[in-house]
Length: 116
Image (cartoon, rainbow, N blue to C red; front, side):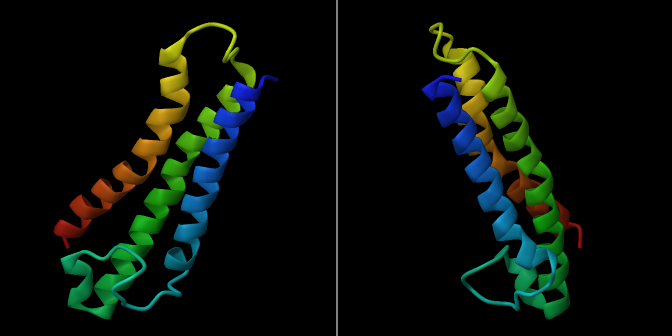
């Protein structure tokens, strides 16, 4: 395993762990309405029930989309990164999952909450 492989895998695993760690208290309903932590969108502040529903849904999205980082991390361990100047593979395995992971679950949750 190259240093590049370990680094790309490590970043993806850390992002997945961070997102899952962020989501678990929300999924379990442990976070009451506040202005600092959770899915702080206007709809969520309408009631405690909506806060919990939106944050549980969002937490499930974050956990589910973290699979993208786990898969990218595993691929980084087996693909020959750093042996060729293949920037598209590096981008696919590092930049895309790290940037897309928080964006997609947030957008999906926002769209879902608008229907409530």
